[in-house]
Amino acid sequence: MKTLKTFRDSEDGAVTVDWVVLAAMVVALGALAGTAMNTEVTAFLGTLAGDVEAFVTGAHNGTF
Picture 1 (cartoon, rainbow, N blue to C red):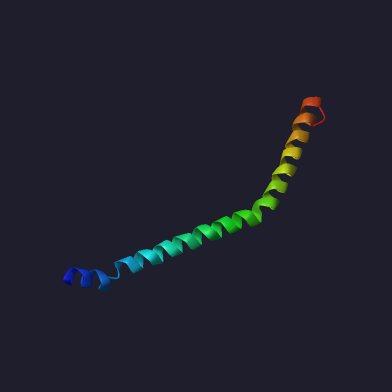
Picture 2: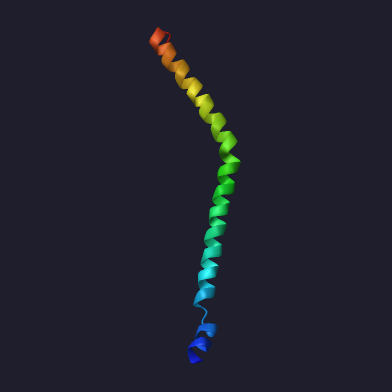
């Protein structure tokens, strides 16, 4: 009975739950930020790829 009382009064599990909730919130915030930036990053990389292709094509043709 004493062991059960000690287990019930222990707060170690509550601290663990706090850290798990905090970690889940950090992961959710990272996922939300990644989703929000996805469109802009994709557009930027598409523009960059077009610019690099134009540069390489121009350099190959002697334009630059």
